[in-house]
Figure 1: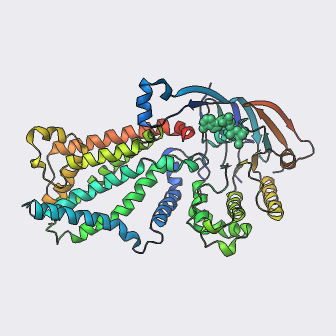
Figure 2: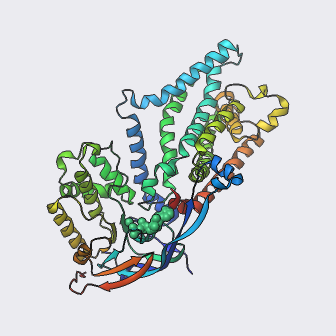
Figure 3: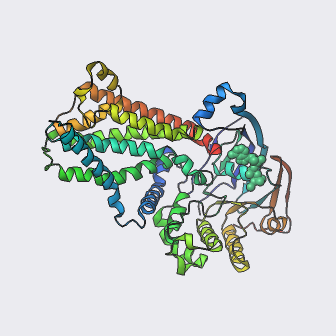
Length: 246
Length: 271
Ligand SMILES: Nc1ncnc2c1ncn2[C@@H]1O[C@H](COP(=O)(O)OP(=O)(O)O)[C@@H](O)[C@H]1O
Ligand SMILES: [Mg+2]
């Protein structure tokens, strides 16, 4: 294992403003007409999606992000992943960060399961040769050995998710950012996913888990951060759970 | 307040800039392979389709200019191909690369990878398709009346500069296209216009003298003259045309990289 400092994610006073483009026209014609006609002009409004959010995730820790729809959870994950730049504040991450904001990002329906495994993993910065060594494990985990050489457009949505999840948990990230994606497949497969995540955590993986489901957060996480309107309104720990080992 | 975001990509700890791009070389490979595979899936002639379009174009122009307009230029097919194939490269890349960021919005908003890989993979994809056409030109070269001049050795270097120029244009267009979604239509019109003000199917000296200075401002004119100099006449054009081509390339690449690096990240939320 690489020796990393204990704090793998440090979110420090992060704020994120979106500019809301009311009446937005993204066309040349619209922009030109907007110079003369009020009705065509775009009104801009600064919208504070995140305001002064701070917290730290340590190695092996799992932190639950809770809050209502629109409270800024997904935006926060995107900022941690480096996809969005914070308007102010900063995020420091150490090690490999794997954002699972949506499962199967980059899957192409016309490609086979196998081709999509390589494509998807490479989007996360994995070399093909590293994927090759894990390929059998991924296929076995997904239980799709029989379908791996058929195009994923013929997969059921459950199969699609299983393949995507199998790839994700074999990337061996240091930090997994999961956005409401842990309800994959049937009960047996979910159980397997949870076991796999538990074993990754014993090896030092940290998780930031976004979920509506309080029970799921309780099962998975040792602490939580609750957002409302882009602000942290509550933080806490679950004393009963101590999955920290490593 | 500090505004830095120290982000370490997945498989390349402490990488930055070029090194992190190299770490993603397999992504580029997989991406281009996917695009080619998807494009030619189920097509009986597959890859050969990328040849049919230029061949038909060349056939038509040869017919129109040799038989209808009675052009007396020797080896007109070679003359035409030297300009046309490189024009095709430019127009295909710029025409198709406009909406790369939009087309890949789903990816770019959900996974972090160096954003530059999006336009790069679009350019590489088009270059791969084009390789077949240029290979054909070199195979036919002796039969079309081409001679083995020493200046042919300059071809790879010029091609590299031309690609760098085109890449710069692509970067600028892909950023602008997020702000003006109908840019592609404008680009199509400009490409059509540029095609006819570039001496590709006709000769440079057919341009009325008072307009020549104006036409020569176009980097495409410079490059077509250079490519034809190498492949057709066997000599490089005047040094000032070479200098213009280099200047355009440096300007385009510098501006493109600057704009892309400056704006690509903040454009993500507008995709
Ligand atoms: N790219 C964007 N442009 C403008 N507003 C956005 C953008 N992304 C998210 N928002 C807004 O930010 C707020 C927080 O969204 P989000 O982080 O997705 O919430 P959650 O995941 O907690 O449901 C919402 O009001 C949403 O409309
Ligand atoms: Mg969300």
